Length: 242
Ligand code: BTN
Image 1 (spheres, rainbow, N blue to C red):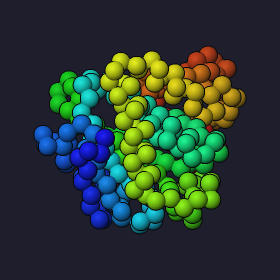
Image 2: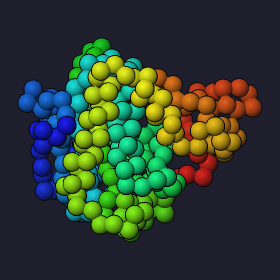
Image 3: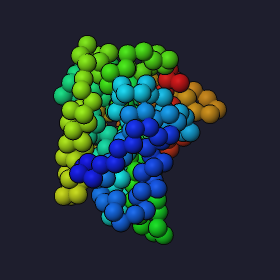
């Protein structure tokens, strides 16, 4: 990963650029698109990803796995695990908040945006956009943090990029070599608030339940008073998270 690396000093969104480049043969599996200054970063559920220029890692990886669209969640899982493994080399308290936010002690250090291009019944390519807060220490969102905030250390971005890309590659190769079950188990080891009684909210109501697991399609299985219920990403959130 990153053998083919496209650097742009500034750009609106590396995911948008990677979605354009992904169409080309020259953008092989593992191509990385990175910028120092992303001014209109995109987040999950149509949100914005704001990152102070020159302080953090904002990049996207083009992946060309051989997959059907209904198997895409394994890629989200693989990428989240790679990031979690890497963050764990810096600090304890690392969790994956379903589906793929990386937390350190209950605060978000990294956001991941997975997008894909489909060609009929197959996935043409996937773009995994990663926003890792590294040296930024002031955030508008009280739920945000960075590696510097949690460790007290200032990091050299290029070194951290290399470490992170290596961790991502290890997990991606693990998937390519057929170890999807290991990935699934390891993802659950990192899963935030698994098997804890918690308040959840949907568009219409709040309820108490505990996370049982995440299924292969990426749905969250929650044990409720009415039995196990499955939820898609847009349908549910923890009641105490925005
Ligand atoms: C989220 O948690 O909402 C996902 C945030 C993803 C942000 C990254 S930064 C690099 C890449 N380019 C984007 O426009 N978004 C992703």
